[in-house]
Image 1 (cartoon, rainbow, N blue to C red):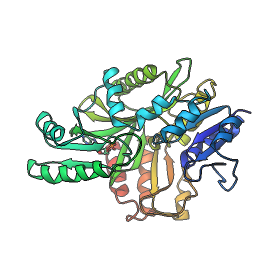
Image 2 (image 1 turned 135 degrees about the vertical axis):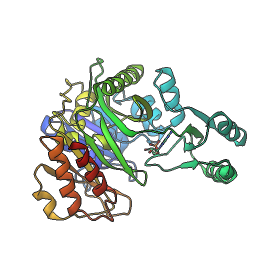
Image 3 (image 1 turned 180 degrees about the horizontal axis):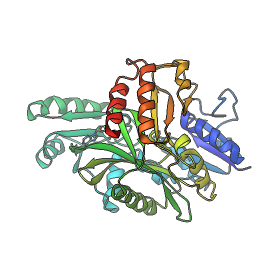
Length: 385
Ligand code: AMP
């Protein structure tokens, strides 16, 4: 039985344990808040500190990219860390991410690095409005971002950014990446996996919808093969460059027929949760296979599938389970506004059936918690007829 230690003890580690158990993999997690190694599904079971966890495992991985750099170094010296600390750090710093994209010639929005007022002014004159300013570090779910639409608001925006930079603490210097806002048609992501020997498998592209900056719905269905190919080429270039091992997600903007990379996540990803019911092998199992150097599983779409995030709510109507091919995934977390508490996967033999089930689901879920679901489901249904 191989033993895996996950840095981070949230829902992604939990789902890795759920996927790893049938493979006879023992998955434990290092909870960075308590500094204890725990059982992801039953965190009350503790197994000592990080140093002990590193000794007791065969492989180390991470469920989030904002891992403290000294923790990453401590893991890396054991030669057990996959993906590498370099790859994990790139996912946590937009400046490094942009450099990687440039090295791989992966198309992305025009951008400019901002550290002071001169850079800020230069960004505005180099890029055209609207511009989105993003914190280089610690940005997720749309946090640490400022949108500048008109020159008249430039001074106020700079004051906010200047205050943010001045208050930023931490061992790595905070900065800002100013990015041209692109008029995208939709947001897509590609989840894929690479093994140390260079084997790669990618899932079908997933269409993503956000509410208040947080992913609300992802749908995986057969997609345009040209877009799939473009995404696959970017995935291969980035993961080969990093000699990457494990699952990586790449978020894209589709602008006309072109994909621009928005950001990368060096880990299993929320937009890949649908793979638990919609793919031959789910992303959690494939990540474990890759980091344990096992053959990768098929990433084929088994049936059109959507994932609906449950945000800030700790219960839904039991009637949801009466809809065919609906699966609940609760994370056993305390209720808090804006917190990802679980997700619902819905599948259909065809996209039409999936769309009908999503409409049915939306009627059972409270609009206050799922504000955009009903409209999304109706639009998706309309596209099928
Ligand atoms: P991010 O944290 O980079 O994923 O940004 C959060 C959200 O802001 C994205 O999901 C997009 O909807 C939007 N966004 C980010 N960057 C851009 C951009 N360059 N152009 C247009 N929209 C963007």
